[in-house]
Length: 271
Image (cartoon, rainbow, N blue to C red; front, side):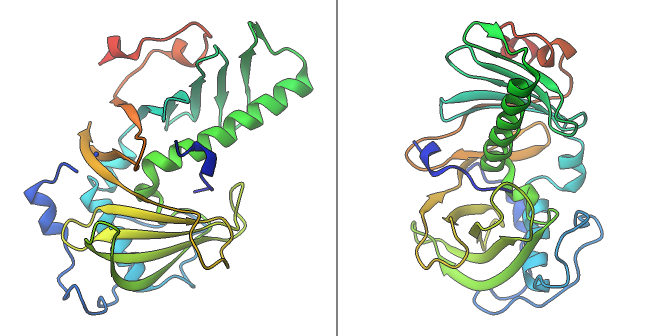
């Protein structure tokens, strides 16, 4: 839920069953306000008091369209290639993360306790101060890169305020609900703002607009969310405009050494 780095710019399988997730209200009218659904409770610290009930309702429908809260909570290991810049593996349960760069730089860290190790320029980083800086960098990379992959699951995260801005059309002329997403003193860049477009037919996120500063009038970028595919029990989107996320994978189990050894890992052998 933190700012994607603009310099990093560089799927939609639709299921008929998703139609059942659509809000019953007329698409052009204001959605009838309802409390947050019991099967998708907000994270501790979500700004419930200042968020619109209609926006919360739409966020709940997005979660359901993506597979549902139980499916998301039950998804443990995710892996993806971030626009060819680096590859990540994330254990949601333990917080362990592996980040591999093409130049053989490797980060192995736990995002919860910020412990781990790093390998750069052919050798392991040993100096405690240098290692701490590298691990902080690794965590910030994970924050950014994971948001590009799983943002629709994080609409009710800690520190998030949601507002419903009505219906608009995307750049591809698709009628969509628009959610404004801002942050309260969380993450690396809490001053950011997003407009999240949600397809009124499928309830899937289909576009986002990023504002580096919440008060600015023009978006720094507007990009599609497309090419949704099912991974495990959830949907994930890969299309982000000119360049896409790739090598997206979900695993039920992975060996511990993926998060402990600097040696190159071939994840395809575990599929």
